[in-house]
Image 1 (cartoon, rainbow, N blue to C red):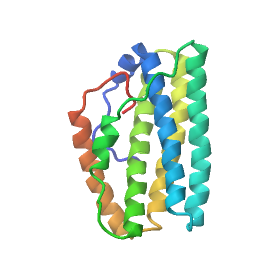
Image 2: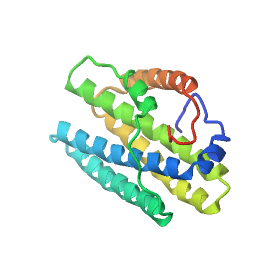
Image 3: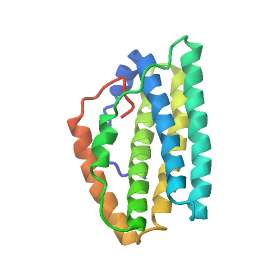
Image 4: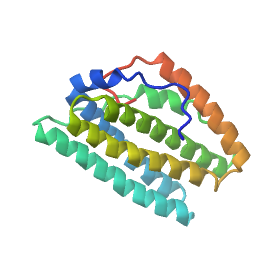
Amino acid sequence: MLKLKLATDPRWANIAEKSLSEILTDHAYCEQKAATSGINMIISCPWHPRLVNNMSALVAEEWGHFRKVLRELEKRDLPLGHKRKDDYVVQLLKLKYGGGDKNTHTCENLLMNAMIEARSCERFRVLSLNMEDEYFRKFYHEFMVSEAGHYAIFIDLAKEFMPESYINERWEAILDGEAKILAGLELRGDRVH
């Protein structure tokens, strides 16, 4: 479904599990940024009812995810910690086509969000299959399912702004670029991406 071109090494789950407080902190901020991104989409396209409705639901769900991860930190007497620079997203955003009209710009933002959700889904799948702690395998399975749904929403909405041929061509280019970015990044246990 996701068609990602570079899979995460399953051993990453073991590295992440050894840095549980770090991965939970990074995960919490990923959820917070996803909610913020949904809000920004609403602000940029208040005239598009389907986008506004879908993003409103997504924002509520992502904020609920933030709170869920925060509760996991609190249960373990761990602080939220500081937000970190997300090198993956910084590099991914460089793949965004900057030209065109409002529809092109909105479509590009939707595709970037789809890519982030797709990679998050894949990473949560790796955690749900490979962590030793059964509780966290179930915990991350729930997030995996949710992120897959978000990916589908972003792709579906993008098709309302640009022709499917544009979507297919851009998605292929984004998949290629994302694989190169991922190949160049260190596999860290303290980061979701």
